[in-house]
Image: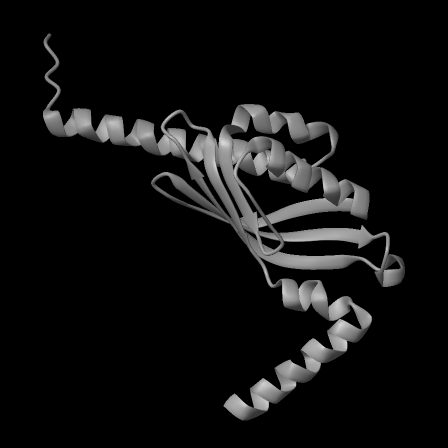
Length: 166
């Protein structure tokens, strides 16, 4: 018996393999976020390119050493940092993670937990490692408004703008 495989079936199989690989890349990266720990930072070496671009509202770095340094500072500034990924989407070479970041700031907040909502956009290279990680979250609302004098000024300006634009 001879089995004939059409070009369409071959292409469909190749596409399924690509989709499965993309999902695997996202799952590995999501696993890193959800197991976020000081000891786990070296896992990034296998997940990200040495020249990864990492940006969030407070940082912008263009190598894995800088990205690790940003993450390591989290452990110096806060207790119990944790990412909880609530949603995930994949589009070709890019994964989007919606998350809650929880922590207890040491310097401010009197031990009250902070919950920061955000989204990470992670783009992968052909070898399956991340080449770009961009975090989107509102630093004004989650950080600056919590600084006593600065926070008052930001809240005042937000109200004035809301009234003027409202």
